Length: 467
Image 1 (cartoon, rainbow, N blue to C red):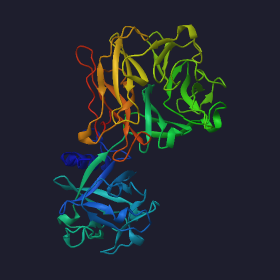
Image 2 (cartoon, rainbow, N blue to C red):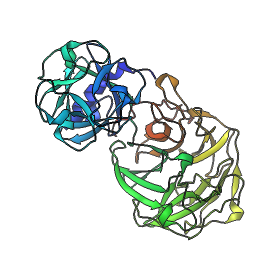
Image 3 (cartoon, helix red, strand yellow):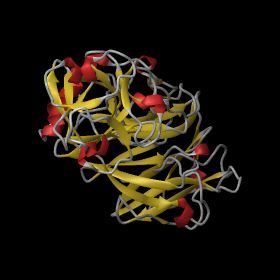
Image 4 (cartoon, rainbow, N blue to C red):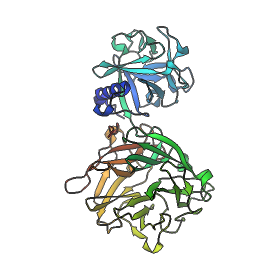
């Protein structure tokens, strides 16, 4: 994918602000745990590279012509106190000064992350969009020996100076909202706190069993509350395929709608509901059986979403291949089958989601297959939570190959309470090596035009600033 060198200065500014403890809202881009960058030597325009893409402890770091290799991609982990770990994406090992040496010329290697001060780096603004990387244990800088411009020149630490061979450009490759592989995010707000409930991704055949919850007060800094429901241990009728949940609150209880199947070779998926006294769980299966058993309606019983109208009535939406929609009963764990309606717009695949603004209801969905780079979001409008819905209005979120962004879809939308500010959470192929089972969660702005139509979303590599 192309290197986005034009944002480097903004990236350095964001880092300087974030690491100094100042408010990040002033920065053009705010970086969070999980940000992935190339480290580009300013004097040579070459990338910090784990030699031969080795995954072994002790593998040396050199400079090499920049490419799309994961051995040139470094994930940032903010440690606080102005320091970060830099982890090689291909190996999950940390940028490390060998043997915690404090000597000039000590080799820079990768090593299993252990929290040592020789794996902690201060990012210091060097001006003009460059930074210095300073090892915490030695107070020495990451350095290309003798200002070499050769491929394969091994990196070292050296007393800090103003030479260009100690200046680095940070090329932003990806800054997901959540570190790691997560998809199908359902975003909601309860009592001025935002919550994300995604699919835990990275499993062949989407075979993960666990759901997690994340919370934030600013839509950027997320707290991981761990596993809130595990199909393998908490549900009697499913042990596989924990996909794309939805959630709603009523009378102090939280109702978690989820998909599940069996790992025994049966591909049928059921829809269930669990309940908790807290939005971060733990959740308990409310019925001991599916809310919507597989085969009850055409298409797969997956991808639940809930919309609650101003009158307190909640509606459940689900379905792959066609969308089912129905008012939920007062107990939130049942509905009248006679009230189930079908909506099947051209291009509909899955991932239905509904919001309301100024009396107009927006029914949104994902088109194409999640394994396709053309996975995208479209919408229609209506006058009630169950329509009737208009013809398909158009696409509001799709790939941007100029940034290496593919497979944008299975979204949800949240409004900042008391404002007309809206945000869209969605997944995309993890950058740069992702696919339909290796996806990352993003949040970007969503805008409405004066006529009430939804402006096409501009997907970004960097995400949003804190609200």
